[in-house]
Length: 313
Image (cartoon, rainbow, N blue to C red):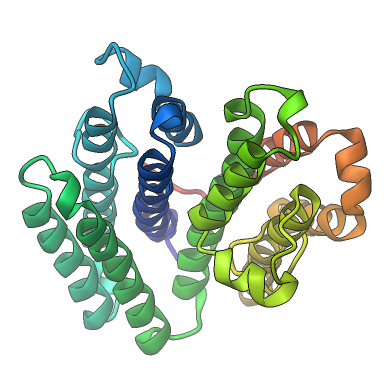
């Protein structure tokens, strides 16, 4: 496969995943703002921090007003991580690689772009926000369904999955890091009701609240949630799940192309580190330090994949 096509598929699915992740972050922030209005501005600041756009937001706004943050994250074209920017970038990449996609996948991406462009023509009213966020999640699911239901399990499928899981792993690690270590005001509040609310927010942000309760009941603890989102391979947004899928898809590419790739060695090493490190050891050495290292490793992996497969543009 040409590097340009591989890169287009990779980034198409990174941007699609990013649009859904941004919607989930907004939903989590909105829930906290409704239930804890006294900490609403802190929550919106945390959402921007998690999305890595706080600096860009402050260049245009003076305050963490909920309506302004929501508009910036949903509609602002100057924000490359906004839902509208991400879905347009995904569609542009889909157009570039259209001959590599089934008709159903292309139509799903194009329909998502048209639906969201219409839904986000104007600033979203608070009363309409849950419906808009639900629409974003459904459109993302529509594309994934078309991918899984109609695409050959070949290198095209592998590059699509690699883009998805690199982006998803990055998002989960950022949520865990920022929510706990940036938004939590003081170490003295660990274990308090505020602390528990923040961990609940983390689960909502990654669509894991119900799954966590199925496995753990009402026993919501920092270590339990960290274990769930870092090491539990049954959780489709956990770091271990994402890295395992990356390892599998890179392995398929190595077999198909009959070549040795440094990116596969890197992801296998990262997978081993995740599965062999006990959660108690992670907390003892520092969750923030562990996640910072993971984010660096994930970014290095993305760069190596680009190098290995000669992405262009």
